[in-house]
Length: 141
Image (cartoon, rainbow, N blue to C red; front, top):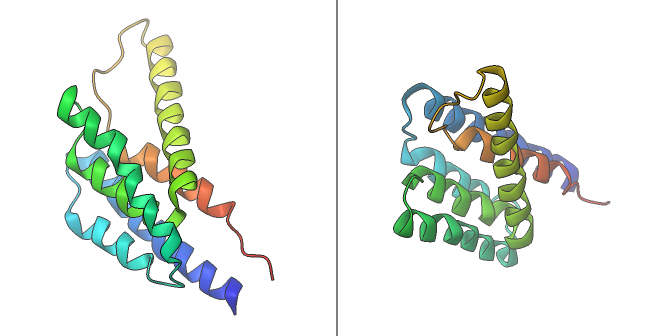
C-alpha cells in the first residue's frame, strides 16, 4: 500500500513538473496552478517534517531580489517541490537542476563556437532534478 501511494504521488508530481517545464519552454511563463498542484501533492501521504523544504525557495528568492534573472515561477516551484521532497532533498534537487543547466550552457557554447543563449528556462532543469531525487526516496516496506 505504501509503495502504491508513493508511486501515485510520483506520477502526479511528474505530470505537474512536465506541464510546468513545457509551459516554461514554450512561453517562459508558468501558471500558478502547477505550483499549487505540487503543494497539494505534498498532502498525499503527508509528512509534515518535509514541509520545511519550502525553504528551498529562499536561495532563489534572495537571488531574484539582489541580482535578478530568476522568475517567480522558479521560486514557487522549488518551494512547492521542497514540500514534497524535504529540505535536504530539495537542496539536492536544486543543485542537480542547476548543474544540468550549467552543462547545457557549456555544451551550447561549444556547439555554437562561443555564442550561447543569454537566458534559459530554468524550470525544466529544476524539474529533472526534482524527479531524480524523488526516485531515490522509494519507501522501504
